[in-house]
Amino acid sequence: MRILLVSEDIPYPNMGGLAKHVLNLARALVRAGHEVDLLGGDQHPIEVAGEEGRFGGRFFGELSGHTAGWKEIGLGMYLPPKRSVQARRFARAILRRADGYDVVHYHGHLPNVARYIPASVNFVQTRHDHGSECIQNTRFRDGAVCTSTDPADCAGCRANAPNAIQRSVSAMAVARYRREVAEAFRRHKTIFVSDMLRRNFARTSGPGPWGTVVHNFIDIGRLEDARREAAAMPHEDGFHVFIAGKLYAAKGIEAFLREIAPRLPAHMRIAIAGDGGDAERLTAAYSSDRIRFLGWCAPERTLAMAARADAVVVPSIWEDPCPSTIFEGLLLGKPTFALARGGTPELAGYASAPDQLRLHDTMAALVDDLVAYDPARRFDLPDQQAGSADHAARRLLEIYRMPAGPLTA
Image (cartoon, rainbow, N blue to C red):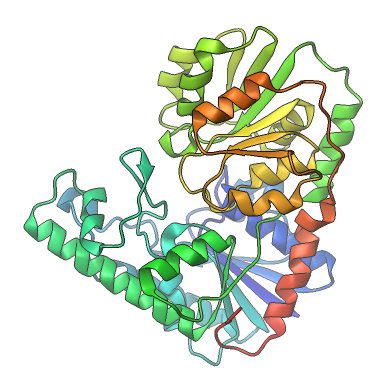
């Protein structure tokens, strides 16, 4: 097949999980014998992504307008036309290329773009975050998961104390956006990386043909390289815990440290890879010879540290849609500690034993389990192919070959 992957998250010098997902998929599709090109943003040349940006096809940096703020922060409200204008712009860029491909697969933050793609185009999109109904993409505010479905309540994410005008205009913007997204999902194929995301969208928009679920995946080749290198190195004394995540509230690293720091066992060492707005404050408050902040780390180093660790902790307190760090921990054979929220519980099927993915309702319970955990406990390696990009590519190819139109299951 001739496949055009599309994402405005590519390219950047340090790319996030969505961009890595797309590039891993591109390489898997090329390995399977397909012709793959990538339509990305015009913010940088592809070379800024280094080795990560090489996937075996052509790159077109033609998506624009997605970084414009429209002065929404200054105005303290969401503007109704903004995301419609941006989606139309993306649709025009996609349609300039679409005739040369059998399928177009979009991974990005404007799900309403499918509303502006003709029904005759074989168009697929994967939803990676809460952006199908939450303009902020996170459904997380004031340090907790947001469960409101009222568009007027969304004004509180653009202004601290929204006045009547800000609340009314923001409500119109969110209602219009959600309506366009629902129309988009009714027109074209939609994939969610977790059933949690699909359920949350149905909670807002009601029942409908809201697509199917294909979980995230990882590059198994790189994981196996990291595991072999770790096995060849001598084990350091102590019980080594590894965390990878952005240092801001939703990822729960501060909540985890607040709970464990007062009772950190003498044999436990914690290494944290990641940067973010809370980095300086958290480092000042918690850094020690047993809690190390490593800053941003290249993907290869992050995976190597996970492979050498005795346990992986993923302390997200938001509804993480389908965290790749869970896959990495499980497929490396590590006990993996997390909260039972978001899409994380769906990943239990990738574990090698029922107690490898250790889910908890509260951070206190997670820390209790981690502190009491027997460091001598080991797990077999699970079926790694189940979480691989190649396995996911085979399922996606089935979807690509389906007739244009919405997916119902």
